[in-house]
Length: 392
Image: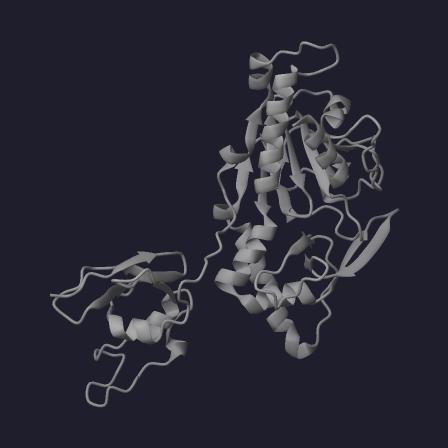
């Protein structure tokens, strides 16, 4: 009888649990398929030499299922998408385990319920007892605790039903002696197609076109750390929001998909260039900026910020022999963050807002029709954290 060996299927790899031990090992699917030991097309039946090359195995190959092993040497049997069966003896897997007991990095979350809170629910439970305060003292503590927890863990919080008073919301997030960050657009952005209140409106944010994932103002050395977007009027159709944790995506890229791609994105400087009729600004910096003292050779490099904005990137200038490698690295990261399975997607109604870490989260919106009015406000991270800490 064959010894039962447990295995679990993951996105790009198979995890094998070795019996009579706490050990496990991860094997990429393409590695397993390339090293299939069968004598039915993979190794010669007489010499047992390999007769397939890795170029014949798609890197994207995945198993169809793990059928129960028949009467054969203890191991794992895999049926591939094309119907080919491979059996890997336990001794083989144990000998060639190249990723034993590794700590896997999770991909960005896509469950929007984890980042949403409803202000009206707090108001119902904790009505204000002091003039000028939006909630009672106990309510404020719970409200700010929820904001702090979501921001710390996920880099974003969606607040439903907070209202339309933008100045009051600003005071929710920074002290009375602090001020918002004024950008070249102005103090508060009115993101609407008929804008008459802001400067430099010849850019995508003031159109009804969809805007894919990006960080704001990457062409500034010290871009604002926090932004909130407040919905005044939603669009008649479309205009939905979506965000992705780009720092988590970068760690996932490095540990689970392509270490070299991460290293390139963290070391190759590119030019971010904002060109408007009356405003121009550029900055040369890598997409992934590591924290001071951290390097790509660290076991787990600390990421300070992500700069990512496909519509403000100048044409790449890399050596001829390095250009394709750069595109592969960038495209792999972009494909990761642009995959809906890694995104938080939601619609904001009038009075709702989303606040996020501009160094950590990429944000986007779908195209829309009809009048849509959002307000955008930039804050200093230290001001926001001080206000939340004082209230929670």
